[in-house]
Length: 145
Image: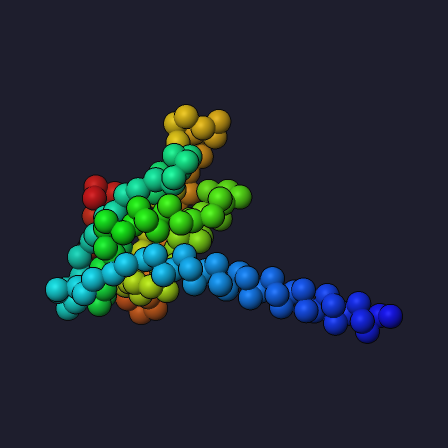
């Protein structure tokens, strides 16, 4: 009986993993990109948006490499996001998706709860950068950008 239970549990876990991968691929397919006209230069890009329910505002700042985020499609991407358990999980999901699709040199995501929400003072800031990439002069301009 234990062997049957173990294999049933393993099959359910595999099915859950497959569903997670399918959902992730579906989300990432909504990330539209265009070719970067100046890939040899380091420069900052900023894109803002909000979740469909208006519960969170997102601000992206990134240093592109070969691809730029298609700004018009960012709203479509945000509309396709599932409900997140927290601002942290939302920020991590967006960071992961955009890192996989854009492959930027640097990516910073700020997520703030809407002023209408009970947790209106809650905000999350996450960032990632490509290994061995650094441009301190450019990154020092982030607060004013």
